[in-house]
Figure 1 (tube, one colour):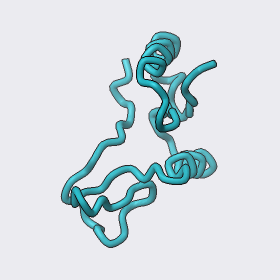
Figure 2: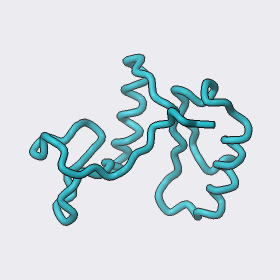
Figure 3: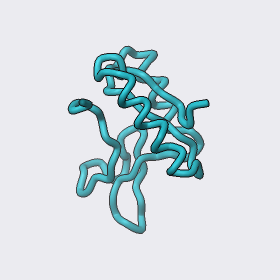
Figure 4: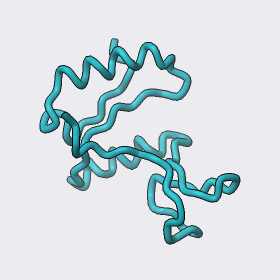
Length: 97
């Protein structure tokens, strides 16, 4: 259903170790790039993309510490209720209320 969705994941051996791309940080313990979720950096990046008109596949965002069981139900509802085109360029805050 969402074949073109962007997935944030760890990346190994990427160029630019001294200056990681926006939205990423260098994890010194694991020696790899990880998403920079500190201080809402990811949300800032998404809002920047929207202002600049940069297309993305859509993002489901939940604050850290939200129980997984509660998120699973909300994710299933989002997947059942939206097509890939409807989900494109959207930021959905979870949990749904």
